[in-house]
Length: 116
Image 1 (cartoon, one colour):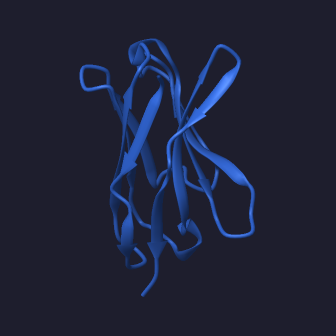
Image 2: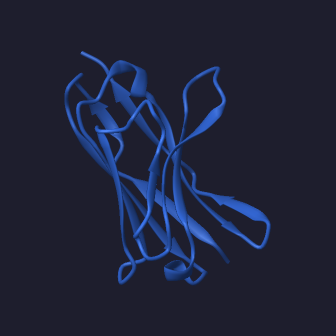
């Protein structure tokens, strides 16, 4: 079955960096667009970044452009989110997602807290 396992979250000071990972299994990872979403307390879950199957096309939310970079390693079935220049408003639970046969699959999420 489809499994997505996020890791790499934690507590970081403003201006700091974190690298999130999402390990995927149970499907042909190399064939699917992968996305990162985040959800802050009391807010909706919003897309942060996406990357096509080959990695050739990436998209970012305006709020993270120039600070976050999404990448993938199809040999390792893993998608990454490099987050630099973190701000308190980046605090959220971060999820990876894949959309297969009209259904979205989510990981359990990893908490990112940006605070001094």
